[in-house]
Length: 259
Ligand code: GLN
Image (cartoon, rainbow, N blue to C red; front, side, top):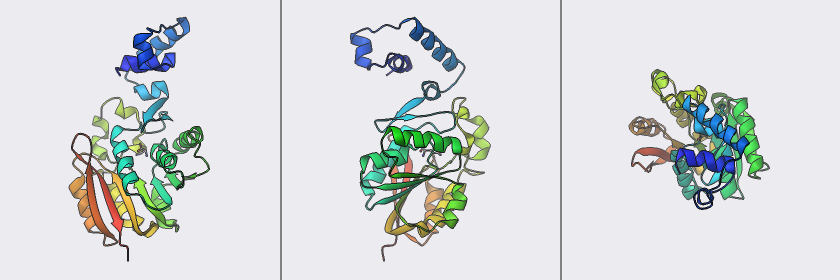
């Protein structure tokens, strides 16, 4: 769909086919809304924040400027997680809109998911999304800095999932204008972009069941550095890298020793 079609189908609450075949027209108040959306868009506001919701893995998620906009690459993370998951308990570090946690809970009706986020704004959005998708009884929301959570928590999970912030701090001010409107806390991965991978690879094995998994998305060009971090952690035994649709290394899967 073109951006204009996305806006029109959103305002008219119709499908693209309705738009084209039935030639649905805007009434005067919808027309005003359309003009407002277009002018906000012209000022560089991300379309997703203007609409207030966005599709992820075929499910609609509320999004606000307090959360990262769900990306198609992250659907690949969910694909790989679903393919490899066995067990019951999942931990999602840095849940944002809750897109990963809620999709897993929705598609695997027997799992329990714990999510952690340092932003109360994000937790609010994520709780709302869990309710919309009817999984709130199986998704727990913890308001904490993952750094504190990872070193103080004792429960074990069958899979730890994360799409942590991975933009190197010096690049933050050079991001495209619309990306700069997303929360920096969801994007900034420290000086070399790898702060959260160092932390998670070092501490998460103690929170993973034997033979369980850590699976993470990472940025373009970070695969080698992250593989090195994983090699340096003897508690992980197996490593696998998955590519995104553009053919770039994008996801790492690590498993803990099973004996
Ligand atoms: N889990 C959310 C996502 O993958 C948020 C990630 C983040 O804020 N870095 O979109």
